[in-house]
Length: 410
Image 1: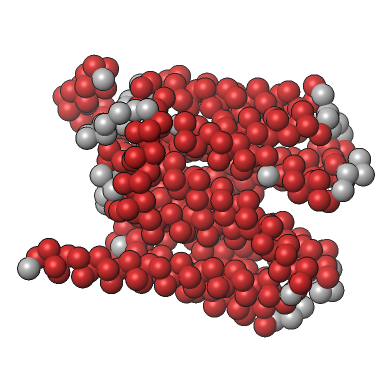
Image 2 (image 1 turned 60 degrees about the vertical axis):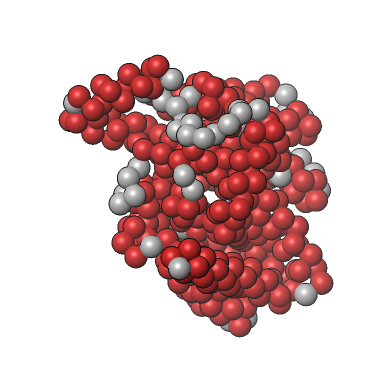
C-alpha cells in the first residue's frame, strides 16, 4: 500500500505526467486484451479443424471447446485475494505467462487430454488477464469516460477475436506454426506490462481477503448489481450459440456453407463498428437506457431472422444490425456494474461479470443444440426470448430502484 500511496502523491504533484502515464497504461492494457482475444479466436476453429482432420467426433470436439470456459469458472473464486495482496501488475504478468507458455506447449504433445489441460490453463490465465485489466481500467476511468474506455476495451478484444481465426490457414503449412506465432505474440505484448507501475484496488471497507471474505463480497455485489450481470451472461450465450450452433441450423435448413461464411462475420462486424459509439452514447444518456434499447432491437432482429427462412441476404442484414445492437452488451454490462458499485467492490463485481459470461458461454451451445434437435425453427426465438427477459429485468430493476429512492426521500 505504501507504493500505491506514494504513486498517488507523485501523480498529484504532476498532472501532465499523470495524464501521460494513464494513457500509456490504458493502451498497454487494451493491447494485452487484444492478444488474449486473438489467442481465443484462434484456438476455437484451429483445434476444431485439427480434430476434424483426425476423425474425432463432433461431440468430443464440442466438449473440448468448453475447456477455456471451465478454466475461467474454476479460477474465478480465487482471483480477488491475490489481486488485493499483490496488485494489478503481478496478476497480469502471471496470467500472461500462463497463456503464453500454454500456447507454446501445444505442439509438444498433440493428445486430446493434454490439449484439454492446456485449454483449462489458458482459461485460468485469460481470467487473470481480463479480471485484472477490467478492474484496473474501471477503477481509474472517470464516470464521464468510463463507457468509452470499456467500449475500446471490448472493441480491441473483438478485433483480436475476429482476426484470430485467420491463423487457422497456417495449419496447412505446419500444425505447430499457429500455436508458436500466437505464443510469441503473447509474450511480446506481455513484456510491455513490465513498464507499468503497480497499483492496488481501492480497499475501502473490504474486510478480509480470504475466500470467505470474497464470497461475502459476491453476496453484496449480487444484492446491489445483480441486473448488471445479465448482459454479460446474455452475450456469452449469444456469441457461443451463434458460432457453435448456427452453422448446424443453417446447413439443416439448406443454407450453403459459403453463405454461412458471410452471415456469421456480419454479426462480428456490426459489433466492432458500433462498440465505441454505444459506449459514448451510454456515457451521455446512461447505461441502463442504452442497454434496454439495444436489447429490444436485438430481440426484434433475431425474431426477424427466424421469420426470414433461408434468405441469406436478410440473415446477413439482420445479423449485422443485431451485432450493432447487442454486440456491446458485455462491455455495457461491465460499465453498468461499475456505476452501481462502490470502488471497493469492483474486483468482486468484475469476477462475477466473467463468471456470468462463462455460464452463458457454456450453456449457450448446449441449449442451442437441444433446441435445434427437437424444434429447429426455435433457435432464433430462444435467443430473442433471452434478450427480452433481460430487457424486462432491467425494466423491473429501474421501477424497484425508483420506488426505493422515493421511499428514502420521504
